[in-house]
Length: 129
Image (tube, rainbow, N blue to C red; front, side, top):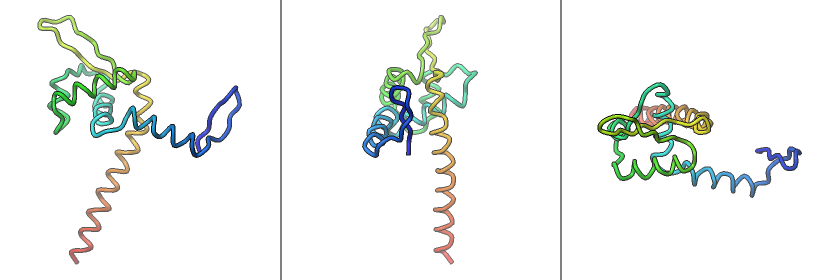
């Protein structure tokens, strides 16, 4: 169970508190694209990532959806949007220190996804025998 610190005292979270926390997490990180955007930006900390690069690199995302997701990630303090002093003006995106706290979540999902893909492949191969 998760731990909660209340008035300086640590205690176990109730199931209801855990479910509320899960809902809060999904409200901020849920959907098809947010974690992918965060992972892409996290994997490129020293690069200047602009909108078009994100749009081209994250297969299947539309410009409208990318714009919406970037605004929500910025609103939740997970990424920064920086206007560059260039002509024409360009905007770059980066993960904040707080946004980096999501990395263990994405790392776990990546590892699970790789294992799941292998499990499905094994299942399909064994059914072919």
